[in-house]
Amino acid sequence: MSKSFQERIAYALSISTDTRVFEMGRGFASKTPVIFKNCFPGRKAMIVADIHTWPVLGEKVFGLLTDAGVPTEKYIIEKEEFHAEWKYVEMVDLLVEGKLAEAKVIEQDNNHIEADAEKAFKPASDDYFILVSVGSGVINDLCKLCSHHHGQSYLTLPTAASVDGYSSFGSSISYQHSKQTFSCPAPLAIIADTDVIAAAPKEMTAAGYADLAAKVPAGAEWMIADFVGSEPIQPDAWHVLQDYLDDFLSRPADVAAGDPDAIADIFEGLTLSGIAMQAARSSRPASCCDHLFSHLLDMTEHRFNGKLQSHGFQVAIGTMTMCAVFDELFKLDLTKIDVDACVKAWPTLAQEQERALEVFKGFPAPKLGYDNITKKYDDAQEVRRQLEKLKAEWPALKEKLKGQVWSFEKMQAAFKAAGAPYDPSMVGVKREQLRDFFPKVQLMRFRYNLLDLAKRGGFYDAIVNPVFEKGGAWEL
Ligand SMILES: [Zn+2]
Image 1 (tube, rainbow, N blue to C red):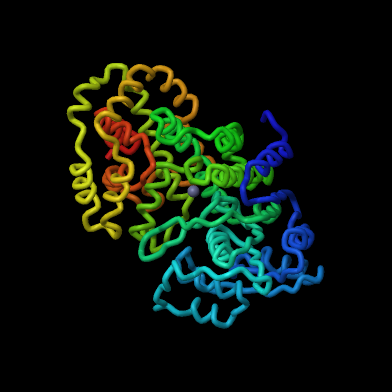
Image 2 (cartoon, helix red, strand yellow):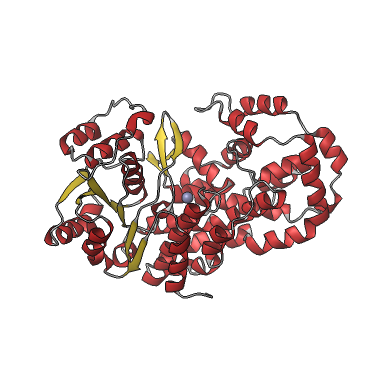
Protein backbone atom coordinates (compact mmCIF):
# COMPACT_ATOMS: atom_id res chain seq x y z
CA MET A 1 0.00 0.00 0.00
CA SER A 2 1.29 3.43 -0.93
CA LYS A 3 0.74 4.93 2.53
CA SER A 4 1.37 3.57 6.03
CA PHE A 5 -1.46 2.80 8.42
CA GLN A 6 -0.74 6.01 10.38
CA GLU A 7 -0.76 8.08 7.19
CA ARG A 8 -4.00 6.55 6.00
CA ILE A 9 -5.71 7.24 9.32
CA ALA A 10 -4.30 10.76 9.59
CA TYR A 11 -5.64 11.55 6.12
CA ALA A 12 -9.01 10.00 6.96
CA LEU A 13 -9.34 12.06 10.13
CA SER A 14 -8.33 15.19 8.23
CA ILE A 15 -11.30 14.82 5.88
CA SER A 16 -13.84 13.41 8.35
CA THR A 17 -16.42 15.88 9.52
CA ASP A 18 -17.47 14.24 12.79
CA THR A 19 -14.95 11.62 13.89
CA ARG A 20 -11.89 13.03 15.67
CA VAL A 21 -10.44 9.85 17.19
CA PHE A 22 -9.91 6.48 15.52
CA GLU A 23 -7.70 4.11 17.48
CA MET A 24 -7.24 0.54 16.31
CA GLY A 25 -5.01 -2.17 17.75
CA ARG A 26 -4.74 -5.19 19.99
CA GLY A 27 -5.98 -4.57 23.52
CA PHE A 28 -6.98 -1.01 22.66
CA ALA A 29 -10.17 -1.17 24.75
CA SER A 30 -7.88 -0.18 27.64
CA LYS A 31 -7.63 3.29 26.08
CA THR A 32 -11.32 3.93 26.65
CA PRO A 33 -11.11 5.97 29.91
CA VAL A 34 -8.47 8.38 28.58
CA ILE A 35 -10.28 8.88 25.29
CA PHE A 36 -13.66 9.26 27.01
CA LYS A 37 -12.32 11.91 29.40
CA ASN A 38 -10.64 13.80 26.55
CA CYS A 39 -13.67 13.76 24.31
CA PHE A 40 -16.35 14.21 26.96
CA PRO A 41 -14.78 15.94 29.97
CA GLY A 42 -16.88 15.87 33.13
CA ARG A 43 -19.62 13.73 31.60
CA LYS A 44 -21.10 10.44 32.76
CA ALA A 45 -21.18 7.30 30.62
CA MET A 46 -23.98 4.90 29.68
CA ILE A 47 -22.74 1.64 28.22
CA VAL A 48 -25.19 0.08 25.76
CA ALA A 49 -24.52 -3.59 25.07
CA ASP A 50 -26.46 -6.79 24.45
CA ILE A 51 -26.24 -10.23 26.00
CA HIS A 52 -23.47 -11.20 23.56
CA THR A 53 -21.33 -8.08 23.68
CA TRP A 54 -21.56 -7.45 27.42
CA PRO A 55 -19.41 -10.47 28.37
CA VAL A 56 -16.90 -10.05 25.52
CA LEU A 57 -16.27 -6.33 25.98
CA GLY A 58 -18.99 -4.36 27.78
CA GLU A 59 -18.15 -5.60 31.25
CA LYS A 60 -14.48 -4.80 30.77
CA VAL A 61 -15.18 -1.27 29.55
CA PHE A 62 -17.59 -0.74 32.46
CA GLY A 63 -14.82 -1.70 34.88
CA LEU A 64 -12.23 0.49 33.15
CA LEU A 65 -14.45 3.57 33.16
CA THR A 66 -15.60 3.05 36.75
CA ASP A 67 -12.01 2.54 37.97
CA ALA A 68 -11.00 5.73 36.20
CA GLY A 69 -13.64 7.65 38.14
CA VAL A 70 -16.10 8.17 35.30
CA PRO A 71 -19.68 7.83 36.64
CA THR A 72 -20.90 4.92 34.54
CA GLU A 73 -24.19 3.07 34.13
CA LYS A 74 -24.96 0.13 31.89
CA TYR A 75 -27.92 -1.12 29.89
CA ILE A 76 -27.92 -4.64 28.48
CA ILE A 77 -30.44 -5.42 25.76
CA GLU A 78 -31.81 -8.84 26.62
CA LYS A 79 -33.79 -9.59 23.46
CA GLU A 80 -32.09 -12.40 21.56
CA GLU A 81 -33.02 -11.03 18.12
CA PHE A 82 -33.40 -7.28 17.82
CA HIS A 83 -33.06 -5.02 14.82
CA ALA A 84 -32.67 -1.37 14.06
CA GLU A 85 -36.35 -0.55 14.53
CA TRP A 86 -37.83 2.68 15.77
CA LYS A 87 -39.00 1.06 19.00
CA TYR A 88 -35.37 0.60 20.04
CA VAL A 89 -34.59 4.19 19.13
CA GLU A 90 -37.17 5.24 21.70
CA MET A 91 -35.57 2.82 24.16
CA VAL A 92 -32.06 4.23 23.71
CA ASP A 93 -33.37 7.82 23.75
CA LEU A 94 -34.49 7.12 27.32
CA LEU A 95 -31.04 5.79 28.20
CA VAL A 96 -29.45 9.13 27.30
CA GLU A 97 -31.70 10.61 29.97
CA GLY A 98 -30.84 7.84 32.44
CA LYS A 99 -34.35 6.35 32.44
CA LEU A 100 -33.33 2.69 32.50
CA ALA A 101 -36.56 1.21 33.87
CA GLU A 102 -38.71 3.01 31.29
CA ALA A 103 -36.34 1.84 28.56
CA LYS A 104 -36.77 -1.76 29.69
CA VAL A 105 -40.56 -1.42 29.49
CA ILE A 106 -40.29 -0.40 25.82
CA GLU A 107 -37.80 -3.21 25.10
CA GLN A 108 -40.21 -5.80 26.46
CA ASP A 109 -43.37 -4.38 24.90
CA ASN A 110 -44.13 -6.59 21.89
CA ASN A 111 -47.03 -4.38 20.78
CA HIS A 112 -45.28 -1.06 21.01
CA ILE A 113 -46.72 1.70 18.84
CA GLU A 114 -44.04 3.84 17.17
CA ALA A 115 -43.86 7.44 18.33
CA ASP A 116 -43.49 10.35 15.91
CA ALA A 117 -39.88 10.49 14.65
CA GLU A 118 -40.10 14.27 14.24
CA LYS A 119 -40.68 14.74 17.95
CA ALA A 120 -37.61 12.86 19.16
CA PHE A 121 -35.34 15.91 19.43
CA LYS A 122 -34.47 17.43 22.83
CA PRO A 123 -32.36 20.45 23.79
CA ALA A 124 -28.76 19.54 24.71
CA SER A 125 -27.82 19.19 28.37
CA ASP A 126 -24.69 18.26 30.35
CA ASP A 127 -26.94 16.15 32.58
CA TYR A 128 -27.42 13.55 29.87
CA PHE A 129 -25.35 10.40 29.75
CA ILE A 130 -22.83 10.00 26.93
CA LEU A 131 -23.60 6.74 25.17
CA VAL A 132 -20.80 4.20 24.89
CA SER A 133 -21.85 1.74 22.20
CA VAL A 134 -20.44 -1.74 22.71
CA GLY A 135 -21.61 -3.96 19.89
CA SER A 136 -22.09 -4.39 16.21
CA GLY A 137 -23.96 -2.31 13.64
CA VAL A 138 -27.41 -2.17 15.22
CA ILE A 139 -26.36 -0.91 18.66
CA ASN A 140 -24.07 1.60 17.01
CA ASP A 141 -26.83 2.91 14.73
CA LEU A 142 -29.18 3.30 17.68
CA CYS A 143 -26.58 5.15 19.75
CA LYS A 144 -25.69 7.36 16.80
CA LEU A 145 -29.24 8.54 16.18
CA CYS A 146 -30.19 8.88 19.86
CA SER A 147 -27.09 10.93 20.63
CA HIS A 148 -28.06 13.24 17.79
CA HIS A 149 -31.59 13.52 19.21
CA HIS A 150 -29.97 14.98 22.33
CA GLY A 151 -27.51 17.29 20.62
CA GLN A 152 -24.41 15.36 21.60
CA SER A 153 -21.96 12.76 20.26
CA TYR A 154 -20.87 9.34 21.52
CA LEU A 155 -18.08 6.80 21.65
CA THR A 156 -18.25 3.47 19.85
CA LEU A 157 -16.40 0.23 20.57
CA PRO A 158 -17.22 -2.15 17.70
CA THR A 159 -17.20 -5.85 18.49
CA ALA A 160 -17.11 -7.13 14.90
CA ALA A 161 -15.87 -6.06 11.47
CA SER A 162 -19.37 -6.58 10.15
CA VAL A 163 -20.53 -3.30 8.53
CA ASP A 164 -19.25 0.14 7.57
CA GLY A 165 -21.84 1.92 9.68
CA TYR A 166 -19.61 2.53 12.71
CA SER A 167 -18.00 5.56 11.14
CA SER A 168 -20.70 6.60 8.69
CA PHE A 169 -22.94 9.61 8.65
CA GLY A 170 -26.55 8.54 9.24
CA SER A 171 -28.40 5.63 10.82
CA SER A 172 -30.34 2.99 8.96
CA ILE A 173 -33.56 2.37 10.88
CA SER A 174 -36.89 0.74 10.06
CA TYR A 175 -39.64 3.27 10.66
CA GLN A 176 -43.25 2.86 9.56
CA HIS A 177 -42.43 -0.40 7.75
CA SER A 178 -39.70 1.08 5.63
CA LYS A 179 -35.93 1.06 6.04
CA GLN A 180 -34.83 4.67 6.16
CA THR A 181 -31.57 6.50 6.59
CA PHE A 182 -31.87 9.14 9.29
CA SER A 183 -29.30 11.91 9.08
CA CYS A 184 -27.05 12.06 12.14
CA PRO A 185 -23.35 12.65 12.72
CA ALA A 186 -20.85 9.81 13.01
CA PRO A 187 -19.26 9.13 16.42
CA LEU A 188 -16.67 11.49 17.83
CA ALA A 189 -14.47 8.53 18.81
CA ILE A 190 -14.02 4.96 17.56
CA ILE A 191 -11.92 2.49 19.52
CA ALA A 192 -11.36 -0.77 17.67
CA ASP A 193 -9.85 -3.47 19.85
CA THR A 194 -8.70 -5.96 17.23
CA ASP A 195 -8.40 -8.79 19.80
CA VAL A 196 -12.17 -8.52 20.27
CA ILE A 197 -12.97 -7.91 16.60
CA ALA A 198 -10.89 -10.88 15.38
CA ALA A 199 -12.67 -13.15 17.88
CA ALA A 200 -16.15 -12.22 16.60
CA PRO A 201 -18.28 -14.97 15.04
CA LYS A 202 -16.86 -15.89 11.61
CA GLU A 203 -20.05 -15.08 9.74
CA MET A 204 -20.00 -11.49 11.04
CA THR A 205 -16.51 -10.93 9.67
CA ALA A 206 -17.49 -12.58 6.39
CA ALA A 207 -20.46 -10.19 6.24
CA GLY A 208 -18.06 -7.27 6.74
CA TYR A 209 -15.87 -8.58 3.93
CA ALA A 210 -18.90 -8.55 1.63
CA ASP A 211 -20.00 -5.07 2.75
CA LEU A 212 -16.49 -3.82 1.93
CA ALA A 213 -16.41 -5.68 -1.40
CA ALA A 214 -19.63 -3.89 -2.37
CA LYS A 215 -17.50 -0.74 -2.75
CA VAL A 216 -15.99 -2.35 -5.86
CA PRO A 217 -19.13 -2.19 -8.07
CA ALA A 218 -20.41 0.82 -6.11
CA GLY A 219 -17.25 2.68 -7.11
CA ALA A 220 -17.84 1.77 -10.75
CA GLU A 221 -21.40 3.11 -10.54
CA TRP A 222 -20.10 6.32 -9.02
CA MET A 223 -17.78 6.57 -12.05
CA ILE A 224 -20.88 6.32 -14.24
CA ALA A 225 -22.74 8.99 -12.28
CA ASP A 226 -19.61 11.13 -12.54
CA PHE A 227 -19.37 10.46 -16.27
CA VAL A 228 -22.89 11.73 -16.98
CA GLY A 229 -22.43 14.64 -14.57
CA SER A 230 -25.10 13.51 -12.14
CA GLU A 231 -22.84 13.13 -9.09
CA PRO A 232 -19.19 14.12 -9.64
CA ILE A 233 -16.57 12.06 -7.83
CA GLN A 234 -15.31 13.90 -4.75
CA PRO A 235 -11.55 13.24 -4.68
CA ASP A 236 -11.15 13.00 -0.88
CA ALA A 237 -14.12 10.68 -0.46
CA TRP A 238 -12.86 8.56 -3.33
CA HIS A 239 -9.15 8.25 -2.48
CA VAL A 240 -9.53 7.68 1.25
CA LEU A 241 -10.83 4.17 0.57
CA GLN A 242 -10.63 3.29 -3.13
CA ASP A 243 -6.82 3.67 -3.29
CA TYR A 244 -6.47 0.66 -0.95
CA LEU A 245 -9.69 -1.25 -1.53
CA ASP A 246 -8.22 -4.10 -3.56
CA ASP A 247 -5.41 -4.49 -0.99
CA PHE A 248 -7.86 -4.67 1.90
CA LEU A 249 -9.85 -7.34 0.07
CA SER A 250 -6.86 -9.37 -1.09
CA ARG A 251 -6.85 -11.99 1.71
CA PRO A 252 -10.30 -13.54 1.91
CA ALA A 253 -9.01 -16.95 3.04
CA ASP A 254 -7.05 -15.34 5.88
CA VAL A 255 -10.16 -13.42 6.89
CA ALA A 256 -12.06 -16.71 7.10
CA ALA A 257 -9.22 -18.27 9.08
CA GLY A 258 -9.50 -15.53 11.71
CA ASP A 259 -6.11 -13.92 10.97
CA PRO A 260 -6.08 -10.72 13.10
CA ASP A 261 -4.12 -8.71 10.52
CA ALA A 262 -6.39 -9.65 7.64
CA ILE A 263 -9.44 -8.83 9.77
CA ALA A 264 -7.88 -5.54 10.87
CA ASP A 265 -7.60 -4.67 7.15
CA ILE A 266 -11.30 -5.34 6.71
CA PHE A 267 -12.17 -3.25 9.74
CA GLU A 268 -9.97 -0.41 8.57
CA GLY A 269 -11.51 -0.54 5.10
CA LEU A 270 -15.01 -0.41 6.57
CA THR A 271 -14.05 2.52 8.78
CA LEU A 272 -12.53 4.41 5.86
CA SER A 273 -15.72 3.74 3.92
CA GLY A 274 -17.72 5.38 6.70
CA ILE A 275 -15.33 8.32 6.71
CA ALA A 276 -15.70 8.61 2.92
CA MET A 277 -19.45 8.95 3.56
CA GLN A 278 -18.78 11.63 6.18
CA ALA A 279 -16.61 13.55 3.71
CA ALA A 280 -19.19 13.20 0.92
CA ARG A 281 -22.13 13.74 3.28
CA SER A 282 -23.86 10.91 1.45
CA SER A 283 -23.72 7.15 1.01
CA ARG A 284 -22.60 7.51 -2.61
CA PRO A 285 -19.01 6.34 -1.91
CA ALA A 286 -20.22 3.15 -0.22
CA SER A 287 -23.20 1.78 -2.04
CA CYS A 288 -25.28 1.70 -5.18
CA CYS A 289 -27.36 -1.09 -6.76
CA ASP A 290 -25.32 -3.69 -4.83
CA HIS A 291 -27.06 -2.49 -1.65
CA LEU A 292 -30.54 -2.00 -3.10
CA PHE A 293 -31.14 -5.74 -3.46
CA SER A 294 -30.50 -5.96 0.27
CA HIS A 295 -32.85 -3.05 1.02
CA LEU A 296 -35.61 -4.81 -0.92
CA LEU A 297 -35.07 -7.93 1.17
CA ASP A 298 -35.23 -5.80 4.33
CA MET A 299 -38.44 -4.14 3.23
CA THR A 300 -40.12 -7.47 2.60
CA GLU A 301 -38.81 -8.80 5.94
CA HIS A 302 -37.03 -11.59 4.12
CA ARG A 303 -36.09 -14.55 6.30
CA PHE A 304 -34.14 -17.72 5.66
CA ASN A 305 -34.80 -20.69 7.94
CA GLY A 306 -36.87 -18.30 10.04
CA LYS A 307 -34.02 -15.84 10.54
CA LEU A 308 -33.38 -12.37 9.17
CA GLN A 309 -30.14 -12.35 7.20
CA SER A 310 -27.25 -10.02 7.98
CA HIS A 311 -26.72 -6.84 5.99
CA GLY A 312 -23.40 -8.07 4.63
CA PHE A 313 -24.74 -11.44 3.55
CA GLN A 314 -27.58 -9.82 1.64
CA VAL A 315 -25.19 -7.28 0.15
CA ALA A 316 -22.94 -10.14 -1.02
CA ILE A 317 -25.70 -11.28 -3.38
CA GLY A 318 -26.28 -7.78 -4.76
CA THR A 319 -22.54 -7.27 -5.20
CA MET A 320 -22.02 -10.45 -7.21
CA THR A 321 -25.12 -9.67 -9.25
CA MET A 322 -23.82 -6.23 -10.19
CA CYS A 323 -20.41 -7.69 -11.11
CA ALA A 324 -22.29 -10.05 -13.45
CA VAL A 325 -24.17 -7.10 -14.98
CA PHE A 326 -20.88 -5.26 -15.55
CA ASP A 327 -19.48 -8.41 -17.20
CA GLU A 328 -22.37 -8.20 -19.67
CA LEU A 329 -21.86 -4.45 -20.14
CA PHE A 330 -18.25 -4.99 -21.17
CA LYS A 331 -19.38 -7.30 -23.98
CA LEU A 332 -21.24 -4.41 -25.67
CA ASP A 333 -19.90 -1.91 -28.15
CA LEU A 334 -21.60 1.30 -27.10
CA THR A 335 -19.91 3.33 -29.83
CA LYS A 336 -22.64 1.88 -32.04
CA ILE A 337 -25.58 3.31 -30.07
CA ASP A 338 -28.24 4.91 -32.27
CA VAL A 339 -28.72 8.08 -30.26
CA ASP A 340 -31.63 9.38 -32.35
CA ALA A 341 -33.55 6.15 -31.93
CA CYS A 342 -32.90 6.08 -28.17
CA VAL A 343 -34.05 9.67 -27.73
CA LYS A 344 -37.14 8.99 -29.81
CA ALA A 345 -38.00 6.00 -27.65
CA TRP A 346 -37.32 7.85 -24.37
CA PRO A 347 -40.51 7.94 -22.22
CA THR A 348 -42.04 11.05 -20.70
CA LEU A 349 -41.94 11.64 -16.95
CA ALA A 350 -45.63 10.74 -16.72
CA GLN A 351 -44.97 7.42 -18.46
CA GLU A 352 -42.06 6.68 -16.14
CA GLN A 353 -44.15 7.54 -13.08
CA GLU A 354 -46.87 5.22 -14.29
CA ARG A 355 -44.34 2.43 -14.84
CA ALA A 356 -42.93 3.00 -11.35
CA LEU A 357 -46.38 2.68 -9.78
CA GLU A 358 -46.91 -0.55 -11.70
CA VAL A 359 -43.52 -1.98 -10.67
CA PHE A 360 -44.15 -1.26 -6.98
CA LYS A 361 -47.80 -2.27 -6.96
CA GLY A 362 -48.58 -4.29 -3.83
CA PHE A 363 -45.14 -3.54 -2.34
CA PRO A 364 -44.94 -2.29 1.29
CA ALA A 365 -43.80 1.11 -0.02
CA PRO A 366 -45.91 1.49 -3.20
CA LYS A 367 -44.79 5.05 -4.01
CA LEU A 368 -41.07 4.43 -3.61
CA GLY A 369 -40.34 4.13 -7.32
CA TYR A 370 -42.65 7.00 -8.23
CA ASP A 371 -40.96 9.40 -5.81
CA ASN A 372 -37.44 8.50 -6.88
CA ILE A 373 -37.98 8.47 -10.62
CA THR A 374 -39.57 11.88 -10.23
CA LYS A 375 -36.32 13.08 -8.66
CA LYS A 376 -33.94 11.54 -11.16
CA TYR A 377 -35.87 11.75 -14.43
CA ASP A 378 -33.93 13.41 -17.25
CA ASP A 379 -35.67 14.99 -20.22
CA ALA A 380 -34.99 13.89 -23.80
CA GLN A 381 -32.50 16.68 -24.43
CA GLU A 382 -30.41 15.66 -21.41
CA VAL A 383 -30.65 12.00 -22.43
CA ARG A 384 -29.29 12.96 -25.85
CA ARG A 385 -26.36 14.77 -24.28
CA GLN A 386 -25.51 11.77 -22.06
CA LEU A 387 -25.75 9.27 -24.90
CA GLU A 388 -23.67 11.34 -27.31
CA LYS A 389 -20.96 11.55 -24.66
CA LEU A 390 -21.24 7.81 -24.00
CA LYS A 391 -21.01 6.97 -27.68
CA ALA A 392 -17.97 9.20 -28.15
CA GLU A 393 -16.10 8.22 -25.00
CA TRP A 394 -17.10 4.58 -24.49
CA PRO A 395 -13.66 2.96 -25.08
CA ALA A 396 -12.04 5.14 -22.41
CA LEU A 397 -14.93 4.77 -19.97
CA LYS A 398 -14.96 1.02 -20.46
CA GLU A 399 -11.24 0.78 -19.65
CA LYS A 400 -11.76 2.86 -16.52
CA LEU A 401 -14.68 0.73 -15.36
CA LYS A 402 -12.80 -2.47 -16.09
CA GLY A 403 -9.96 -1.25 -13.92
CA GLN A 404 -12.41 -0.75 -11.05
CA VAL A 405 -14.91 -3.57 -11.07
CA TRP A 406 -14.18 -7.26 -10.55
CA SER A 407 -15.53 -10.00 -12.75
CA PHE A 408 -18.38 -12.07 -11.33
CA GLU A 409 -16.03 -15.05 -11.24
CA LYS A 410 -13.41 -13.23 -9.17
CA MET A 411 -15.97 -11.81 -6.74
CA GLN A 412 -17.70 -15.15 -6.28
CA ALA A 413 -14.38 -16.90 -5.62
CA ALA A 414 -13.44 -14.25 -3.04
CA PHE A 415 -16.76 -14.63 -1.21
CA LYS A 416 -16.38 -18.38 -1.22
CA ALA A 417 -12.91 -18.05 0.33
CA ALA A 418 -14.07 -15.45 2.87
CA GLY A 419 -16.97 -17.59 4.07
CA ALA A 420 -19.62 -15.24 2.66
CA PRO A 421 -22.60 -16.46 0.62
CA TYR A 422 -21.69 -17.07 -3.01
CA ASP A 423 -25.11 -18.10 -4.31
CA PRO A 424 -28.49 -16.43 -3.65
CA SER A 425 -29.87 -19.71 -2.33
CA MET A 426 -27.44 -19.42 0.60
CA VAL A 427 -29.53 -16.55 1.97
CA GLY A 428 -32.79 -18.10 0.84
CA VAL A 429 -33.22 -15.96 -2.27
CA LYS A 430 -34.47 -17.52 -5.51
CA ARG A 431 -32.87 -16.52 -8.78
CA GLU A 432 -36.30 -15.61 -10.18
CA GLN A 433 -36.74 -13.29 -7.22
CA LEU A 434 -33.45 -11.55 -8.00
CA ARG A 435 -34.48 -11.13 -11.62
CA ASP A 436 -37.80 -9.65 -10.54
CA PHE A 437 -35.99 -7.20 -8.24
CA PHE A 438 -34.22 -5.48 -11.13
CA PRO A 439 -36.96 -3.05 -12.19
CA LYS A 440 -37.36 -2.02 -8.54
CA VAL A 441 -33.60 -1.63 -8.07
CA GLN A 442 -33.45 0.73 -11.02
CA LEU A 443 -36.26 2.90 -9.73
CA MET A 444 -36.03 2.88 -5.94
CA ARG A 445 -33.29 5.43 -5.37
CA PHE A 446 -32.85 8.99 -6.63
CA ARG A 447 -29.22 8.14 -7.33
CA TYR A 448 -28.10 7.62 -10.95
CA ASN A 449 -27.00 4.02 -11.49
CA LEU A 450 -25.82 1.73 -14.27
CA LEU A 451 -29.39 0.61 -14.95
CA ASP A 452 -30.46 4.22 -15.52
CA LEU A 453 -27.74 4.63 -18.13
CA ALA A 454 -28.80 1.34 -19.72
CA LYS A 455 -32.44 2.48 -19.89
CA ARG A 456 -31.38 5.65 -21.68
CA GLY A 457 -29.14 3.81 -24.12
CA GLY A 458 -31.59 1.01 -24.86
CA PHE A 459 -29.23 -1.72 -23.59
CA TYR A 460 -30.96 -2.55 -20.30
CA ASP A 461 -32.23 -5.93 -21.50
CA ALA A 462 -28.85 -6.68 -23.05
CA ILE A 463 -27.05 -6.44 -19.71
CA VAL A 464 -29.73 -7.78 -17.32
CA ASN A 465 -31.31 -10.70 -19.19
CA PRO A 466 -28.10 -12.66 -19.94
CA VAL A 467 -27.36 -12.86 -16.21
CA PHE A 468 -30.33 -15.23 -15.93
CA GLU A 469 -29.99 -17.01 -19.25
CA LYS A 470 -28.10 -20.15 -20.14
CA GLY A 471 -24.44 -19.72 -19.25
CA GLY A 472 -25.20 -16.58 -17.16
CA ALA A 473 -24.10 -16.01 -13.58
CA TRP A 474 -27.55 -16.83 -12.16
CA GLU A 475 -28.81 -19.13 -14.91
CA LEU A 476 -32.42 -20.00 -14.13
ZN1 LIG B 1 -23.41 -1.68 3.71
